[in-house]
Length: 229
Ligand code: 5RP
Image 1 (cartoon, rainbow, N blue to C red):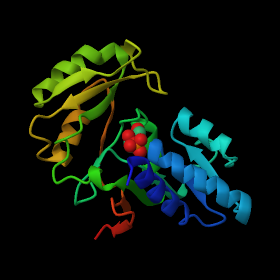
Image 2 (image 1 turned 120 degrees about the horizontal axis):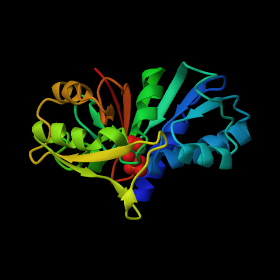
Image 3 (image 1 turned 60 degrees about the vertical axis):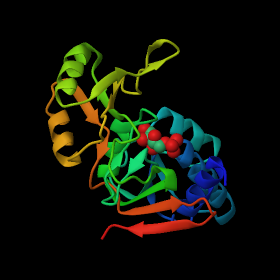
């Protein structure tokens, strides 16, 4: 099955979890796109009464295209359901996020959500975080070099993310350092704390304790549902 097919399967399945009356945190990414597509369909055909707060400008634009009613975080600060993708997830539901650059807003909104559902394809389930994907760290542009030096001391190789030859700029006006750990990340909790301690770091792409349910799209077309024990 194609990658897109896997993403559609999990995105559509997640959209079935939505109930009328809910306040929704809307994640970001190509998997979330399908969630939004199906959610828009359900709103139209079943007259679901929901409102969502997007985690990025990209999601805001996609949601508007699907006629999903939106609000801002100034208006709503508690969500019934949060649905988002991930770049890697391990057996303890610890994740790397930020491949799409929306990690800060994602972490804020996930932390305000009662039920957090993560949608991934099976290629993103790993035994050790960081073994395949570089860890995104959002930093303020002023402190970028200092952050790079300190991150290197934590055992990784940080690389400034670029777009069209210029530094990539997040929706918050910051930069992203993609940190490659040769042997993966041995102790994600400790690493997250150490990275958060660096002045200039705005958000670390390690998401711990921010997933309750995981929907895994399998190559055979099925969707496996896992719940945090
Ligand atoms: C954006 C994210 C995304 O959830 C993550 O990158 C997965 O995206 P995709 O579904 O496109 O693979 O963290 O900041």
